[in-house]
Amino acid sequence: MECLKDNIINEVMLKMQFNIDSLQLKLLEKSLNVVLYNVDVVKMETELSTQLDDNEYLLNVYQMRRRNRLADNTIEQYMLSMKGLLTFRNKNIREITHNDIDFYLDYLRMKGNNPVSIDNVRRNISAVYTWFRKQEIVQANPVERVERQKQIKKPIDHLSGIEVEQIRNACETEREHAIFEGLLSTMCRVGELLTIKIEDIDFQTGDILILGEKNNEYRTVFLNDKARLWIKSYIGNRTEGDVFVRDKKPYKCLTEEGIRFILKKIAKRVTDRRIYPHLLRKTGATAYKEKGCSLESISKMLGHSNVAVTERWYAKTSTESLRIEHRKYA
Image (cartoon, rainbow, N blue to C red):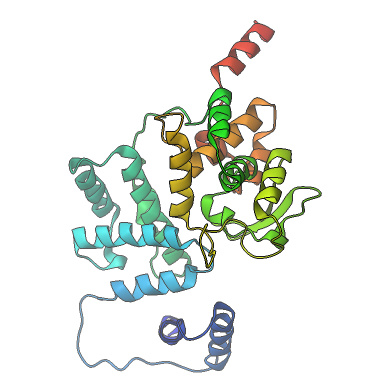
C-alpha cells in the first residue's frame, strides 16, 4: 500500500518536474504525502502479470530525485551504466543479481574496456542500487557481492615546477593568465570555475565561496596573489557578472570546452604535453602536499568527502620528498 502511494507521488512529480522549480517540486511532494497519509490506495488488477516492466519509470524517478544532489554529468554516467546493464540482461531492475552484473562486466572486458572504465561502471551501478535499496525498491544492492576490478595504480599526473613556469610564461593575454592562475590557485573543477561571479570574489583576502559540482555543498576556495592580480587586471572595469567571458559580443560566459581549448592553445606554444583543467587541479593539490599541507586540508579545498580519494588520485608524494625523508631518518 505504501509502495502504491509512493508510485502515485512519483508519477505526479515526474509529470510536474519540468513545469515547476526544484523548491516547488519539494513542496509538492510534502503536500502529497500529507494529503495521502490517511488514504488507503488499492490497485485495480486488470490482468495477471508475472514480471514488472517499469525499468524506464524507475530510472526516471531516480534522475528526478537525485537531480539536486548530483551533477548532471554524474547522473548521465549512472544512467548509461544502468541502461547498458539492463539492455545486456533484459531483466527488470528488481531481478538483477550479482551474477548478472559479473557477466556484464566480463562482457565489457572482452570488448576491450580497460579495468578503470569497468570499475567505474561497477561503481555507477552500485550508486543507483544503493539509492533503490534505501527507497525499499529492492531488498539489497547486488553489486555488494561483485568484486572490484584489479587495477595497476598509475602515478598521479601533474605538472612539475618547471612545467608550471613554462605554461605560465606561454600565456599571452590577460584572460589566458587569469584562467591558468585561477584554476591552479583555486583547484576548482572547470565547471565550478565558470560559476564564479565577479561579486563573489573578496579581492582583499582572495576568498571565493562556491557551490561544489559533485556534492552540491558550499566551500571556500582561495586566490593567491598572482591569481588575484591577473583576474583583477582581466576583469578591468567590470563589477558584476561572470568572470570568464568570451572575447566577442554579447560577452557570454565561456563554456567548459572553451576553457579546455584555451589551455590547449597555450600549451601548444611550449610543449606537446596535453594540458587540461583537471591536470591543474592535481598539480595544485600535489604542490600543497609537497609543502607539508595535510591531506585533510587538501581534501576540503578540493571538495572531496573522502580523504582516500584525495590521496589516491590527486596529491602525489614525489620521489624527491621520499628521498629527503629517507636521508632524514636513515
